[in-house]
Image (cartoon, rainbow, N blue to C red):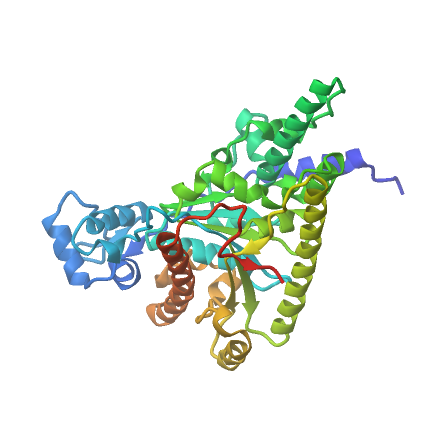
Length: 445
């Protein structure tokens, strides 16, 4: 039997990619007046109809038959929100982030696998956008599928300057930190008369990167995605290689620093990040940068023990990272920044009729860390009928099935919205502290 070489493997991959040329069109998701007034812009349907009749300049939607139910695109719903937010009950229709508050980075984690972490990220991000928040969703999972779930437009053509940057994905934010550190080190070496260290192609591409170069809009107004990329598959190897070449460079705050320096915390109200399984350098870099750790916990036997084991492993891993940073800082006569979170929360998922007992047991053990409502199990997603819940048209399943699932999904989002409001309140009532001080953050372990 002939050997199968690396060139053969590459040729097979290219052949598969070339044959996969059919991409599904972006969904034409339409939203009815019933759905709008029930969950998005709470008001009586008759009131919305009266406003539309009195304001012909507003989006009027479309109807299959004369006098039938009107349906609106997501962009039209956003325009209606803007109209009602300018009226007397603005706070009901448009969240008002305090001037002193910044968007927190909430990182989702689930060490046990198959916990519904990626779908939870998609559900929460879409629910937030439909509630009027400006949301950035980051996919830091090497096996990430959020671009497919969110059904964003095609990537830039390969070989263009835009594609070379976009192909880095979240790794680009970490690579830029490493590249800037290497450039600074090389300047010092040149001043001493030493030869500079080589900068590889990934670091060179990332050096001039701006986070906005990686971000792409979704079909939902107010919701943008920083998608995963094939480069994330080798992120752990790359980060390890850069650390070996630069002993004083630490990637653990690179993502947070990028959000700050590129103005994303002011541009958005909420930043959600999906992480992968395991605790390699990529995952640790994202989790250490987070303001809030949101652990996803399925309502299933044994899941609580798996979460406990995973969180203990995370505490040990980041404890080792912090010890290493402290040793390096002490050798240089500096103080190391502690790795801390502002909040730790647990989001129950896969809620159903038989999960009430498990949820009560979780609440007894986790206390206020457990968010009050679980994301429901959606059969239409499991069957492939929809990529995520908010793509589902209630006409396909019927109102009697859709309504309780929508209520449960919205209730789970409200738990996260309350968490976000508490963070904004803290920012608004206390002076913003220097990030290196770590005051008001929850220590690891």
